[in-house]
Image (cartoon, rainbow, N blue to C red; front, side, top):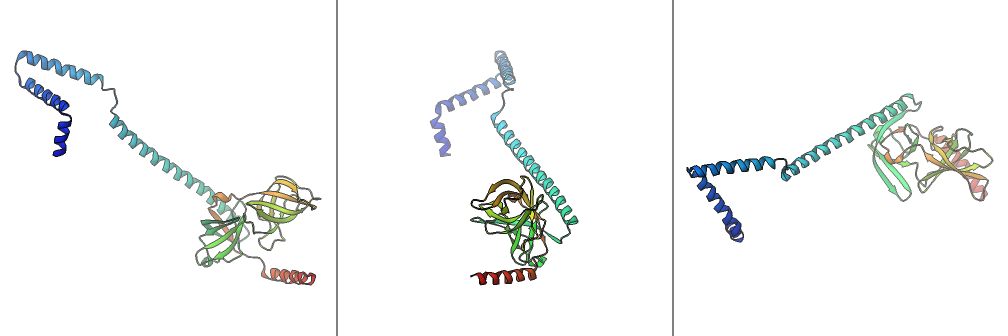
Length: 281
């Protein structure tokens, strides 16, 4: 109440004008004089005319409320459109993966990527399958586009994949058209096929696949395509810059190949090569 009194005192001129105007209208409305009635009729008509004349002017408060409602509606529609678009993309991806699983001669286990980790130049992904799904260390991971990496750790329900774009990963690969053998390496997130004899013919755009010489991955899995061809300085070899066939930035669904390298072969090669190295030293 005190605030109301202070407000009235502060704007006493406006308050007085409003009060007097109200009293005047009350007196006019209660009067039965013909001139007063005529004046009242004319006043009402003028007020109605002015009101109709300014009806086209929008109410700013109504416009604000309407704009807020429209923005909320537009946001809801946008979210629904994004969800529908994402659902459509996922359906297409699932169809492609199902086709891969149906026609692949290898035994595959479907998995979803639920985590991603980068440590320096090493990149990893976490899958929602693990030991309870028969996943073991060393199993390759692929998509319908090509090679993703290999399993390096498992728990009951999860597993960790060492991605192809990893500076510590080394394995044998080859080109399809001319069957040129080399070693796949990764430098700062970029793939290269190295130690390819420079006397052999190279071709930009040629597909690079895993080699039969690899003890890590099965042969004939697509890795990528040749982007650039350059000479390794001071050697008789070419270095081929490879564009991965897999888009690692939006990796979501993958397959784990339920097989590992032949342990007998690995043991024999390690024992034989290790013995030769000891004799040389």
